[in-house]
Image 1 (cartoon, one colour):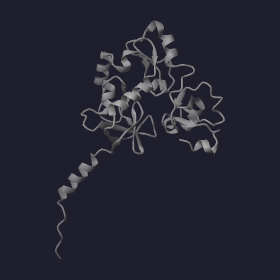
Image 2 (cartoon, helix red, strand yellow):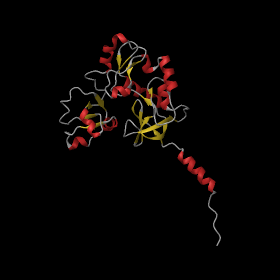
Image 3 (spheres, one colour):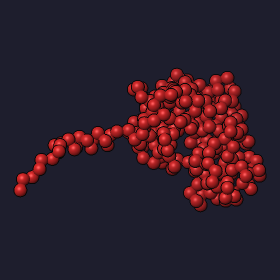
Image 4 (cartoon, one colour):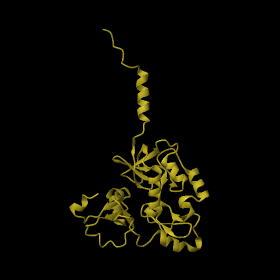
Length: 259
């Protein structure tokens, strides 16, 4: 009995496997959620190795005035992408924001990733990521040139998220003799709500029993009105949960279904 020849050579199969395995995970028009998070279809990608200010984070500019650096970082990323298509290599689950993926994302036609561009422009810090690419040199260049965040004074986003008010102050406009005043601006007792982001987040030790750092309160929850000094503000439940906050237990069933 004669054996049939394969429809294509064995080496072609291996080439096909290699091509598929190195293809971008997703390519689409991006929806910018924060200064370092974009949505492609149903998947939210954190830009691996880059850490931008949170939407509700305040910084100080080079004139010693407070400015909404988290909103600015988001708007700058939106402008950078425009209407162009973005593709992201999926590097796996983000180690900090558990409900998001870590991605190395590039705009079609650009030679540099969005991750690297944000750090190079001083709109994000370089942090340890899942990928092999590091942006320490880009961060140093941005700091030396006083670009973006570095021209003013700010707290590292990861310290802002943790409510670490005694951490190092970063930027050319930081002054040791005004440290207390600066920290009061960077970590206000009653942070302003950014735009329509009306979900209140409160850091809470009891939330650690469920593996979280805090609790968030939706409008309509019994605890919403009484939470008068939130530590954080979020635009959606996904954002709050990705940041490590759990929903308040006193929310009604209808509230639990909101996004």
